[in-house]
Every structure is written in structure tokens, then in C-alpha cells.
Image 1 (cartoon, each protein chain N blue to C red):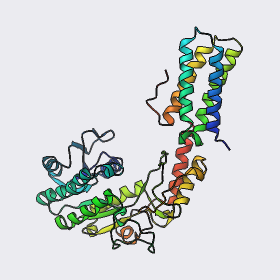
Image 2 (cartoon, each protein chain N blue to C red; image 1 turned 135 degrees about the vertical axis):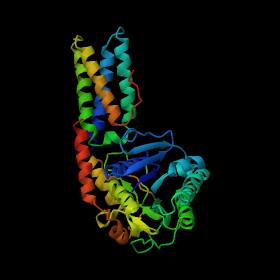
Image 3 (cartoon, one colour; image 1 turned 90 degrees about the vertical axis):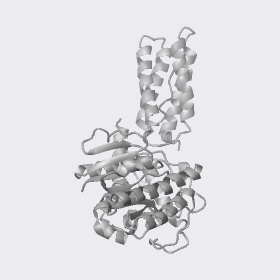
Image 4 (tube, chains in turn purple, brown; image 1 turned 45 degrees about the horizontal axis):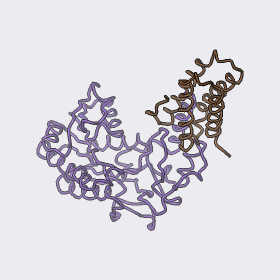
Length: 290
Length: 107
């Protein structure tokens, strides 16, 4: 395979994707806004950095030129997406359409992987789990609305695109918790380890039978838990009582997902929830020794 | 039960106040540092980080420094005061970094 373009490649997920593809022997073109931090990418063998803007046609043309595959991650995410509706649609919808249309002209057979979100299903708490890809879509926020519109647009402009509806991503590092957790105490949640999302994205780009498919991407059965249990595990590791946690009063978009097909095709669920907790433990020990 | 990090923060504030009271007016620079620490620790007590186990080792180190400064002033033995104060500043900076409050300046 020739060069793989990773849009949004300097973001936290994009960097991991670029570095993994590079390690696997691919040449990677990382495309992101000039203001982003390209540390760990720039100057690395096999990685080409291109600063630009997905909202600008010439910029996208430059990015897509001579690539043989695209992983499209560039997007405005919450909370920023919720403050600027117009910009969110310009980046998340028009940007996606632009990448697809330019790629269609340059290399119409090239794999295009689009990172969508399970948030497009909205509040599914009243329905029996798991959430399948056929579940009706009902946005709870601007971000989800933009992803629904982008998926629709992509289906028309690039029918062979692989759409990955990615669940909440758990990063194995100690971070300050949100003021309010974005789910209720009893809500079903199924997040996914960051490395497994990276695996899904990288495998999607090279799996022929993934073309034109829509997949839910989540951690699998070991990650299926409830809001309270998930937060309690985290707080227990930090030695903080669960009573300190503040949960949303109304359900968010989280649920348990049907990932049987995505796992069968993409083989990405490699990290169990227990293994993730173990990684967090190691991280805490390291920090305690600082 | 009060988390150990917050308990340590209270001890640090108390020791800094007692040390301040024991210093004479000639020690303006030292007083400024201690005053700054009191303000920072007061602010930090509301942060999530201080409620976690992660805060224990570094706040323990800061507490030891603060109580040592207090003891030096009480014994009127300030020959080691600048060295201990410099160590205290270093540990406070580490604490700020761990609590992700980079950018707060200890004057």
C-alpha cells in the first residue's frame, strides 16, 4: 500500500493511528491544523506532516494527492462542537464531503475510513440492548447531529467508505474526572480502550470486506458495565469515595453495543476492561513514585 | 474521613502561618514565598487531585518541609532556613505540576 492519509492526525487518537501504521511499514501523511502539536510525528521516518485546513479545498487537494487510503478523523468534538454549530457542520460535514469528493476524483477505489460516533443513536436506555447499527438515529447534541449528516453525505458521495461508529474511548492514564459524568448512575455503558480503537481504524483501512460497511466499535462484553460501576472502579483506584462523583440526571448516549460483526471483520478487541484497570494501576504506581 | 492530601494541605497552611508569625520584618522575600504557598494551598484544597491517593507522597514531602521551617523558626535557628525553603519551593512546584496547575507561580 502507498501513502495513508490520516486527517486530524495530530490529535490524540490520530497520533496513535499514524504511529501504528508507520510501525507496520506504511508511509503516513498526517494532515492537521497548523496550530496543532506535531511532536512525535514530525521528523519521524515514514511520516509526512502536512499542515492545512479541512475547510479549504486547496488544502484538502494537497492532502489527498497521490494517497492510496484515507483515515478521516478530523472533526470538531464536544465541548467545542456544542458552542459553534456552524463551524461544527463546516468541519464535520462539509469537511468530510470534501475529503470524499476529492478522493473520488484522485483515487476512486481507495479505502476511506470515517470515524463516526455511537452518540448518533441518542438515548437508547428504554430499548433492550445491545444497540445494533440498524437502530434509528436521534441526536442529543450538535456533534451527533453533524455525524448523522456526515454519514448520510458520505453514503452518497463515497458508497465504499467504511463507517466506524466509535464508543467512548478510555485512555490508560490518570486524568481529572469531568465535573459531571455524561451518563446516569444506572445507565449501561460500554467504552473501549484507545489501542483497540486504533486497531479497528488501521484494520478497517486494509480489510477488503469492510468496504461499504457500517460498524459499531466498542470494547466488547468485558467493558459492558454501568455508569456507577465504571466510575467506582476509577475512583477506587484513586482512593476517592464514589460519593464525590456527580452523574448526569438524564441519560446520555451510552449503551451496550452489538459489536459481533465488527469484531469478526476487524479483529480489534484486544484489551479487556480488567487489563485496562491494570494499566491504570501501573500508571498510579508510577505517579506515586515521582 | 478527611483525605490525607487535604489533611497535609491544612498542616502546610498552619505551619506556614506559624512560620510567618515567627519571622521578623527583615525576611521579606521568605515571607512572600510563604504567603504565596498559603494562598496556593488554600486554592488547591478544592481540587480533585488532593482527594486522591496520588496526592499523598508529594503533599507528605511538602508537609515535612513546612513543619521543618516552622521548627527552625521556633528554635531561632535560621541558618538552614534558605536551604529548606528552596527544597520546599521545589516540592511545591512538583505538586502543582502533578495537580496540573502549571503556570501558577510561587513568588
